[in-house]
Every structure is written in structure tokens, then in C-alpha cells.
Picture 1 (cartoon, rainbow, N blue to C red):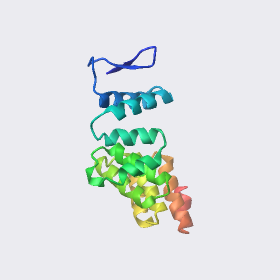
Picture 2: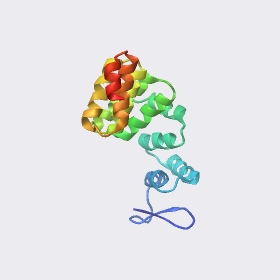
Picture 3: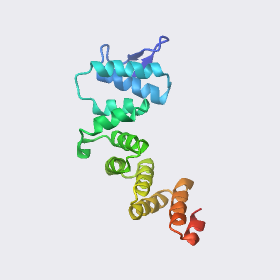
Picture 4: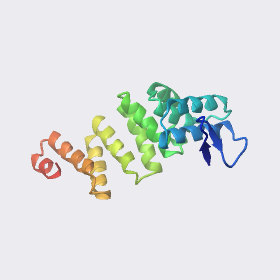
Length: 178
């Protein structure tokens, strides 16, 4: 549990002297959920530099929030996807590679995110799009259909199917989904 004082410094309610990694996580969470002040990321980076652990998840999270996709890809180059146990870390790496136009790498990490959290619609959506952009249309179609089955009330899922069929000249199905 963290509390922010009027000086915008996090304070831990459960520990008088929290570890640097705990402070890093606190600043990242606070930035993402409550107050997207760049000073929060500066503080997260400060504590992250002080930690003695590898802190792969936190480094990727910080890079993602900073939109520093090159640093994320640098971290990911040394990773085997099976080493990643946090689905959000895998997702963020996949997103970084996608932003860099590296769909092959993006697919690998989105697949890992989906294997760790198989019913996460955001992960599946990003995987389907990456597969389509990576010229793996048949696999993308399977994911797009899965998304509509899992939640038929999300219009984006229908749109992706419609777009797929439109690009494959199946105008009857495209019209149905669009």
C-alpha cells in the first residue's frame, strides 16, 4: 500500500523502509493508474537503477511507459520467451516490437502473453493484428473468429473479421462483419 504526500513522493504504508524494487513498482503503478506525471517515471527509474535484482518486468514496464521501444527490444534480445512469467511483460515487449515494425518478434511475444493469459481480449486482438500484418492471414483469421466468439459485443472484433474478408475479396462475408 502506497500513499502520496503533498510533495508527490510515494510512502509505503506497510513498510517503513521498502526495497528499491518495491518503490519502482509503486511509482510505475501510480503513474499508470492515477497520475501520469513524468516525475513519477523519473522516480521509478531512480529506484530501478538502485535495485540489485534483474527487474526485467519493471525495466520493460518503464520502457513501455516512456515509449522507449529500443530499450525494450534490447532487453528482449537476451530473453527466451519461455523465461517470461508475467503476461503484461510479454505483451509490452510484443507491443514494442510491433511499434518498431518487427511483426515476427511481435507475434512471438504476443503468443507468450496469450499463453499466460489466454482469455485476455486485448492480448488476443494484438496477436491477431500482428499475425495479419506478418502475412500469417490464416492464423489471424482463427484469432479474429475466437475474439468474436469470446465477446460478440466488441465492434472492433467484427471489424477485424470484416477487414480480413474484404482484403481477401470475400465481399459477402465482409459486408456481414462490417
